[in-house]
Length: 348
Image (spheres, rainbow, N blue to C red):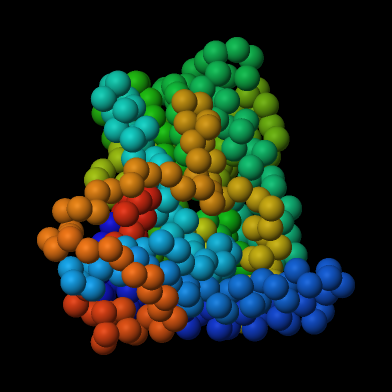
């Protein structure tokens, strides 16, 4: 990919969040008895993206990125963006392959009741366990499956998102899921059932037959009930399933947390321990082995097309990003030749 100046400026601007996150980690270190773990995290987050090592081709006005220091922390705004970009890159080919094989993609949102910060780790663990049961209902043909299902799921990627409500001091963990199925029937998606009132849209939610079944099976999964209980459910958790459009993959593979939600130290600490050692994204079925977290893959792109004049490179180390997009090297082409980061410029 090419690091355009506006992308580099956006990355530089987002580093301001890291100063606050670094202070939170240092405070956690002061409160903790865990050796220097949080102290080291504080320093890594603060120093993230401060050193860029390039092969410089000055005659050609080209910088070829060799190394850049990254903290790889989930609370670093930029590393979260790079991590998501690489997950999208790893999903791109399997996604296209499944479409060519005749599968249709769908988006599912699975919610649970809001919870307190103290309960967040428990709820996130329960979400993961419940999702496995839910997916089995739609994918298994043995006793784990649900034989009256409207669709069969052969592959999926589920992604965790946690939002925070400052007014209620509550957390909203939920799943966004990308699923693939051969069983597409447009009639199942007709919105004909009136649901809850939506303050956001100022209208009632409308649900289809497949929406209602997803709600029921998710409620059974999350509350650890059995299929026999499906007819006696008095209410169900809010969920929906819809056809995937061009922006659907970006919608489902969204960030697990938002910078703007981390309004104070207590929120940071609750989110940190709520996500600690827990998988944010995971593949199932035909996508089970897909690398979606802290993994990168990609083919090295050709450099020669950017070199009009033959020359040997010299090493360049930049520590101030403004020299890359605002002054000294603003007119240089700045390359990252592995295409694993190619979605960075399409992420907010």
